[in-house]
Length: 220
Image (cartoon, rainbow, N blue to C red):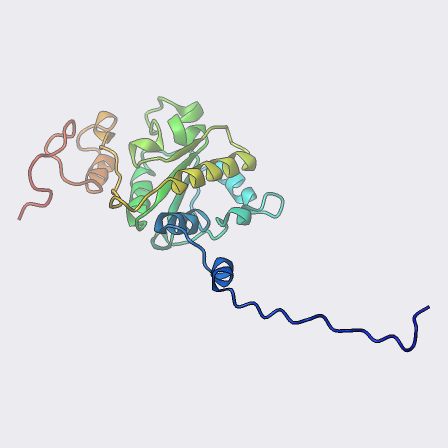
């Protein structure tokens, strides 16, 4: 039972003026690389894009059960101009190749690509078919490969985490190098093919497709 005449004394005020302690509590020392890489890997915006059954697994990754939002990659953009991650889920046929290449070119730098499923990696069960590319890496540079037929949402999340690890190692000490692949469609499409003609317009001009053109890229 408390005493009625008990007086509670207030605690003394702490009027510390230690400048170093205030600095330690309010200043965070880091590098520009760490800040940029943290922002980039934590806010990947994929293109709203799908080709085959792997796209169903990609869509499932955005559901509450798997919650791709935990990795900051839930904002699928309908325009490649607003995206920095190209997920290629499914079979890439030669008929679709110009569209895939064009979407990649329309994405701003820096950008990354992830091949999802065996079909996007090397043709899958349709490998060596005349109508299927031997892998999307013949059209654009791929950063992460996620195998499977189709890979489960957990596999896609693992691939995104691997891509985040790769982005973490980027540096602005050197200028961002625009990456591309050498054209290989001439090995699979005959001369005069309309798909080949369209793909030729999506690469810088070459005299010989077996070797890069040594002159000016856009001669006057």
